[in-house]
Image (tube, rainbow, N blue to C red; front, side, top):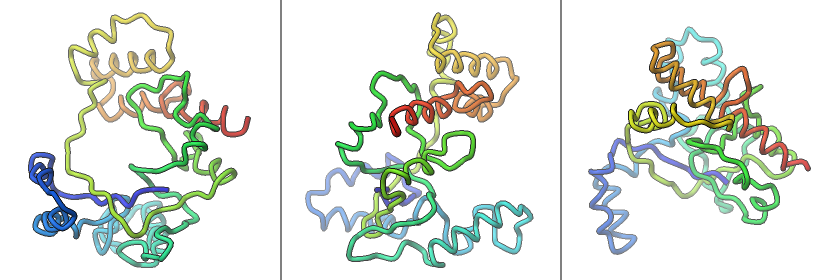
Length: 232
């Protein structure tokens, strides 16, 4: 089940006082005081801001227009999933997630966290991008998926993205001097080198480390490893 994560404009320094809350009422009061309770759901934007590439009538990208139309349809033109007594909603399409819950026996049975494999600097990706991971399609064969909470929310604070594995000077220098035959670390070394030489931007280097034509990125191998256990 996926958490109903809501994006806020509050950074970690501003949110620190909430740690002093002693009761649920104090916690709730702080969220209201900061305006956090009105934060939009993270995986899709709402109202005019629902359209990721601008208002509908400004769109020139047909694919973006199609995706926005699909989002509107699945969320029934509402701001959020409609609350139900069950507390969750089943959707035909997988959108996105940053928090999820899973039964322990399911994780153990399918080696979900990949004991014996090292996926450095990467989340476990579940997506529908053809040729990359497609785990969403495969998970539907063995469990009810996807399911999203529609009652409770988990809040996400605003923070910078820092790709330590590509930009930290000390780490990357040591990484380049490291001798390894691990495919993920070898790919990372290539990404670091191309980024340092100016052949790739930071975003391009990150993408290369995650998925590439050699099939040696973290997302490439994540899919391969999971498929080994899902249907054995």
